[in-house]
Image (cartoon, rainbow, N blue to C red; front, top):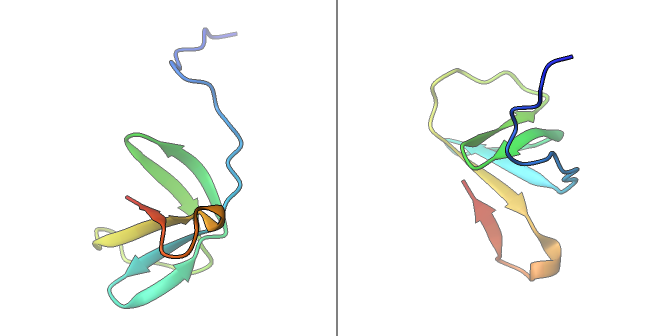
Length: 70
């Protein structure tokens, strides 16, 4: 068994999110991994690698218009 090198523990984070590429908004099926350095998400569409995008985590209890952008 290998020693854990992770500085922070994994936390289940089940929230809604969306990914915007150009003018198309994709619903994120699942956030696989989220960290300070980036994230890995699952969506139901194929995207072209290298495209500029905006990832939004939707926080409904924070009120309308409040999103976390990455």
